[in-house]
Image 1 (cartoon, one colour):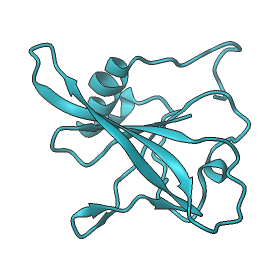
Image 2 (tube, helix red, strand yellow; image 1 turned 90 degrees about the horizontal axis):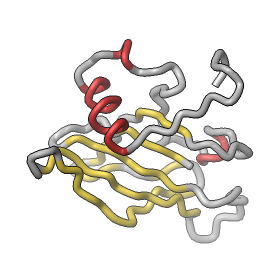
Image 3 (spheres, helix red, strand yellow; image 1 turned 180 degrees about the vertical axis):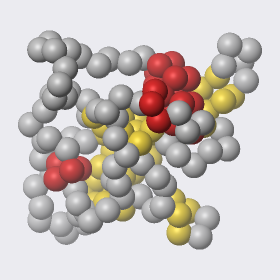
Image 4 (cartoon, helix red, strand yellow; image 1 turned 90 degrees about the vertical axis):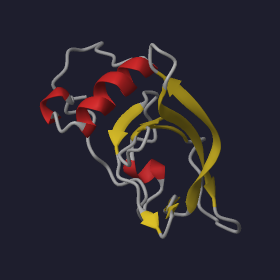
Length: 138
Protein backbone atom coordinates (compact mmCIF):
# COMPACT_ATOMS: atom_id res chain seq x y z
CA UNK A 1 0.00 0.00 0.00
CA UNK A 2 2.26 2.73 -1.29
CA UNK A 3 1.74 6.22 0.05
CA UNK A 4 0.58 5.13 3.51
CA UNK A 5 2.59 5.48 6.72
CA UNK A 6 4.83 2.61 7.83
CA UNK A 7 2.81 0.31 10.04
CA UNK A 8 -0.52 1.23 8.44
CA UNK A 9 -2.89 -1.75 8.51
CA UNK A 10 -6.32 -2.01 6.94
CA UNK A 11 -8.40 -4.36 9.07
CA UNK A 12 -12.07 -3.68 8.30
CA UNK A 13 -14.84 -5.57 10.04
CA UNK A 14 -17.46 -7.45 8.04
CA UNK A 15 -19.88 -4.59 8.78
CA UNK A 16 -17.33 -2.10 7.40
CA UNK A 17 -16.85 -4.13 4.23
CA UNK A 18 -20.53 -4.71 3.61
CA UNK A 19 -22.37 -1.65 4.96
CA UNK A 20 -19.75 0.94 4.00
CA UNK A 21 -17.48 -0.10 1.13
CA UNK A 22 -19.78 -2.41 -0.85
CA UNK A 23 -22.78 -0.12 -0.40
CA UNK A 24 -20.75 2.91 -1.55
CA UNK A 25 -19.42 1.00 -4.57
CA UNK A 26 -22.89 -0.16 -5.63
CA UNK A 27 -24.26 3.39 -5.18
CA UNK A 28 -21.48 4.75 -7.43
CA UNK A 29 -19.68 6.72 -4.71
CA UNK A 30 -16.18 5.92 -5.97
CA UNK A 31 -14.55 8.69 -3.90
CA UNK A 32 -15.39 6.67 -0.76
CA UNK A 33 -13.35 3.69 -2.02
CA UNK A 34 -9.65 3.75 -1.04
CA UNK A 35 -7.11 3.29 -3.86
CA UNK A 36 -5.94 -0.02 -2.40
CA UNK A 37 -9.38 -1.57 -3.11
CA UNK A 38 -9.24 -1.71 -6.93
CA UNK A 39 -11.51 -3.47 -9.36
CA UNK A 40 -9.72 -6.67 -10.48
CA UNK A 41 -10.81 -9.46 -12.83
CA UNK A 42 -10.15 -12.60 -10.81
CA UNK A 43 -12.08 -14.88 -13.17
CA UNK A 44 -9.40 -14.66 -15.86
CA UNK A 45 -6.56 -16.79 -17.26
CA UNK A 46 -4.29 -16.16 -14.27
CA UNK A 47 -4.00 -17.99 -10.96
CA UNK A 48 -4.49 -16.00 -7.73
CA UNK A 49 -0.76 -16.02 -6.94
CA UNK A 50 -0.10 -14.44 -10.36
CA UNK A 51 -2.59 -11.61 -9.69
CA UNK A 52 -1.69 -10.87 -6.07
CA UNK A 53 1.57 -10.77 -4.13
CA UNK A 54 2.00 -14.44 -3.25
CA UNK A 55 4.53 -13.60 -0.51
CA UNK A 56 2.34 -11.11 1.34
CA UNK A 57 0.83 -12.05 4.67
CA UNK A 58 -1.79 -9.33 4.29
CA UNK A 59 -5.29 -9.81 2.92
CA UNK A 60 -6.29 -8.22 -0.38
CA UNK A 61 -9.56 -6.31 -0.76
CA UNK A 62 -10.90 -5.85 -4.27
CA UNK A 63 -14.06 -5.49 -6.30
CA UNK A 64 -14.77 -7.86 -9.16
CA UNK A 65 -17.65 -8.32 -11.56
CA UNK A 66 -19.28 -11.70 -11.85
CA UNK A 67 -19.14 -13.39 -15.23
CA UNK A 68 -22.33 -15.17 -16.09
CA UNK A 69 -22.73 -18.20 -18.34
CA UNK A 70 -26.46 -18.49 -18.88
CA UNK A 71 -27.80 -18.46 -15.31
CA UNK A 72 -24.58 -19.63 -13.61
CA UNK A 73 -21.57 -17.68 -12.40
CA UNK A 74 -18.29 -18.58 -14.13
CA UNK A 75 -15.80 -19.22 -11.34
CA UNK A 76 -12.85 -20.63 -13.31
CA UNK A 77 -9.52 -18.84 -13.10
CA UNK A 78 -6.12 -19.82 -14.46
CA UNK A 79 -5.38 -23.45 -13.69
CA UNK A 80 -8.36 -24.04 -11.39
CA UNK A 81 -11.65 -22.84 -10.02
CA UNK A 82 -13.04 -21.04 -7.00
CA UNK A 83 -15.12 -23.68 -5.20
CA UNK A 84 -17.97 -22.66 -2.93
CA UNK A 85 -17.71 -23.86 0.64
CA UNK A 86 -20.61 -22.11 2.33
CA UNK A 87 -22.89 -19.09 2.25
CA UNK A 88 -23.89 -17.00 5.23
CA UNK A 89 -26.60 -14.37 5.36
CA UNK A 90 -25.81 -10.81 6.44
CA UNK A 91 -28.60 -9.14 8.41
CA UNK A 92 -29.33 -5.50 9.09
CA UNK A 93 -30.25 -4.14 12.54
CA UNK A 94 -33.87 -5.28 12.14
CA UNK A 95 -32.93 -8.86 11.26
CA UNK A 96 -33.69 -8.47 7.53
CA UNK A 97 -31.40 -10.29 5.08
CA UNK A 98 -29.49 -7.61 3.15
CA UNK A 99 -26.67 -9.67 1.66
CA UNK A 100 -24.41 -12.68 1.73
CA UNK A 101 -20.88 -13.68 2.65
CA UNK A 102 -19.81 -16.64 0.51
CA UNK A 103 -16.56 -18.48 1.24
CA UNK A 104 -14.58 -19.88 -1.70
CA UNK A 105 -11.36 -21.90 -1.90
CA UNK A 106 -9.17 -22.02 -4.99
CA UNK A 107 -8.71 -25.58 -6.20
CA UNK A 108 -6.47 -26.69 -9.03
CA UNK A 109 -8.08 -28.59 -11.90
CA UNK A 110 -7.56 -32.37 -11.89
CA UNK A 111 -4.25 -33.38 -13.45
CA UNK A 112 -2.84 -29.87 -13.33
CA UNK A 113 0.90 -29.78 -12.68
CA UNK A 114 1.13 -26.14 -11.53
CA UNK A 115 2.25 -25.33 -8.04
CA UNK A 116 -0.64 -24.03 -5.92
CA UNK A 117 1.57 -21.58 -3.99
CA UNK A 118 -0.28 -21.97 -0.71
CA UNK A 119 -3.91 -22.03 0.16
CA UNK A 120 -6.08 -19.27 -1.31
CA UNK A 121 -9.45 -18.41 0.17
CA UNK A 122 -11.91 -15.70 -0.79
CA UNK A 123 -14.82 -14.12 1.05
CA UNK A 124 -17.27 -12.76 -1.49
CA UNK A 125 -19.70 -10.17 -0.18
CA UNK A 126 -22.78 -9.47 -2.25
CA UNK A 127 -25.87 -7.40 -1.64
CA UNK A 128 -29.26 -9.02 -1.81
CA UNK A 129 -30.30 -8.72 -5.49
CA UNK A 130 -26.99 -7.17 -6.65
CA UNK A 131 -24.25 -8.57 -8.94
CA UNK A 132 -21.19 -6.60 -7.80
CA UNK A 133 -19.51 -8.51 -4.97
CA UNK A 134 -16.62 -7.30 -2.90
CA UNK A 135 -14.01 -10.00 -2.55
CA UNK A 136 -11.52 -10.41 0.22
CA UNK A 137 -8.54 -12.67 -0.55
CA UNK A 138 -6.01 -14.06 1.81
